[in-house]
Length: 144
Picture 1 (spheres, rainbow, N blue to C red):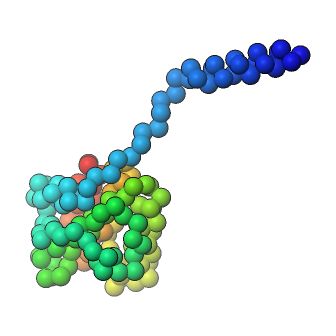
Picture 2 (picture 1 turned 120 degrees about the vertical axis):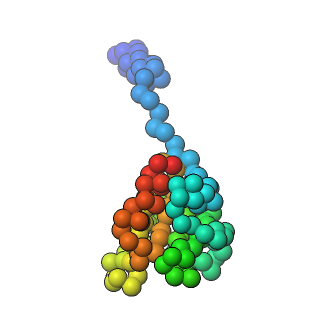
Picture 3 (picture 1 turned 90 degrees about the vertical axis):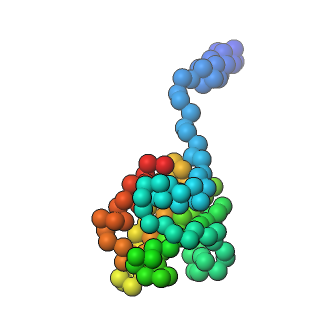
């Protein structure tokens, strides 16, 4: 009986080692400045990109590896957006949920958010940007 248990255990380990299941792809983060450059390459407004400081995050969770703030002068002198890069999907989800929950509190706090989980990138843009224009930024984020 013991020999059968040992043989069965060995066979299970052998089958597990020979499994042909493809490994789950690991997301890789895209630098936030590269996303802003992709906006510009797509002909979208994203001027005066600057690296984000702690003050730029306000009350948002500071879970990113880097962030870049950019302006949308066609809306107003201080209107703009943020591009945030992460090291894991959970932090991306936490930050996206934060920005989305602000919008649920009222239109004053609404902003557009676009995430690319495979590239670990989140973009948050001023909610005054018309939906059709905001969707163009979302398309760039999706195509990274």
